[in-house]
Length: 387
Ligand SMILES: *Cc1c(COP(=O)(O)O)cnc(C)c1O
Image (cartoon, rainbow, N blue to C red):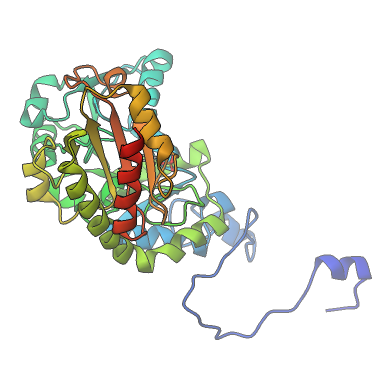
């Protein structure tokens, strides 16, 4: 290269590091612009084929690597990343729905998914109808000719009913309707969605995959190539790129995810077993306990449970009292989301969230972190005493 002006040298460099560098972490590639060798390479690039690089939005070696890893863990073929779990949900809806279509959602779906469904109905003339999460094969009676997508979540957010995915998927398949699963609770470890007949699996990587309470990301995993392409179009049209540093943070959590999940699971079982025998608690909404609707389905389809469960306080306790219980906790912090090392607790007004909720009493959701379960139990015990 000829001699450059200092200003040009500040912008351009001919240096390339030596070949042959190897290390365990995936490299972090930051890029909006991706460079082409020549115009022919520019013209031949197809952003949908993940064997070439075209623009930062469509992927770098960092995001391609995370996508491949998540697809493999979930038991799928292809994966697309989105900047949050909720963005992944929206990417699915916009990929497969159009005006005049109908979607079915379980009454216990992750609430922002419900807000999105209701917005699709108001703004795009797509009907969003809600079904009892325990409906099983009965979903067949709800499917209309214009039903295009059935959302499922296993177990459902907050109230934790475990749906019969096999029965729902079989009924959907018979009528040619797609089934999407929000598989965040199981982290893709304790439930194998594609073996049950699910078409689209979605993960909030924000939770166990990251494990750090420090990053938002979502993933959509499929096996069918045509379906993947539809979702890839949605990914592109909505511009759902993710940052390389965030992808790195999620990848950093993967090697320890199963060990963490099993520790959360064991801790949650201990805390839940202790809570269950307390007179203040009327129902244990943890899929591994018989109180939980769908417990038998959980035993059949799942290999674990992780750290998230809910309880119902006996109706003799007022909301003021259960709020005092939550405020009195010291190790458990109050906050949304979960999947990190710290235990969390949140009260929900479940009667206002569900159409046919029968039980009285306040629902409180626990997320069991990686603290010693004995200390968590002691914390709950002192908070119950203050209630
Ligand atoms: C957290 C969560 C989401 C959304 O993930 P974000 O990254 O927070 O947008 C979706 N579904 C379930 C079941 C979740 O727990």
